[in-house]
Length: 339
Image 1 (cartoon, one colour):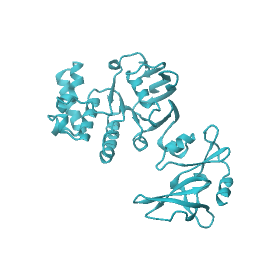
Image 2 (cartoon, helix red, strand yellow):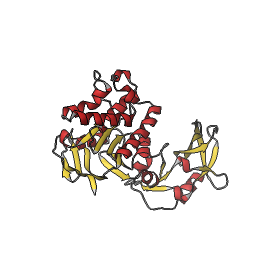
Image 3 (tube, one colour):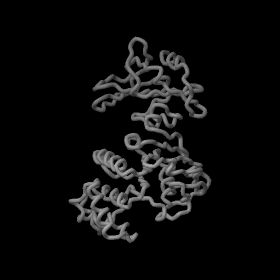
Image 4 (cartoon, helix red, strand yellow):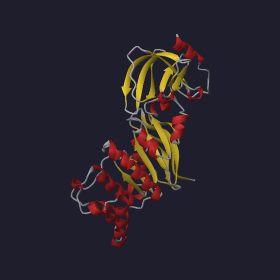
């Protein structure tokens, strides 16, 4: 049974809706990522779930209860924002306990929860410090601790790691996921970073122009993209999308290989060395075709390479609707590439 149920949620400012008739369910203890580019409606959706924005239409249910019109403080949720939103004049301990004091939680219970959460986020040695004395990662742990200490069953996170450097983001991804599993929290996590979504979430909802393009397990979005938008957004580097008259051929760079015996002819445009591998851009059917090769390889611009891929790794989409199509022959693309 769904713990969170979103039904036909819509938010409009003027003519174009920011969120357009969106529906999805989240199970208890599930980690769902709302992924998408800027302006796709993911943060607006989160603000409506939190009660910080009123929907134009639709309903929000938490644990079978309609909370669409409830004030934020009555929804039994916690939030972690992109900015840490810590009080600079308060210590770590005081920042964590601020919400519990405002709700007049018994002092003995406050101290019990504080001890538990300080151990969880490894901040016991820093509890008397002010935010200005902490690193970015430590500030984010304080924000997490403040959310956890509330004992709210639902945690909403709005791009909480975007202000951290790459190394800290990697560390915090593991910490957040570990805490979520340990505490059994139901998490809805907004991000524009597909690596965060794919590595942390049980399921990913990829948004585009206020609608859900596809929702499913990370491997489903990667292996079976429902539309050409999903295919081009999921994966790094993104899937090659080559249009024909009625069809779009999709093939991932990591699935293309050199094949001098039966490959298609493609001319090198650029070689981009990444360390463990090299991303090579070539020209095929009048379009750029990227593929990966292990190690350091360099070819001069204009050099002809023969490329191939397994039939089962090709994807086809309707050029009219963008929707995924059943497997079709790729002979036309192959023959055109050989010309």
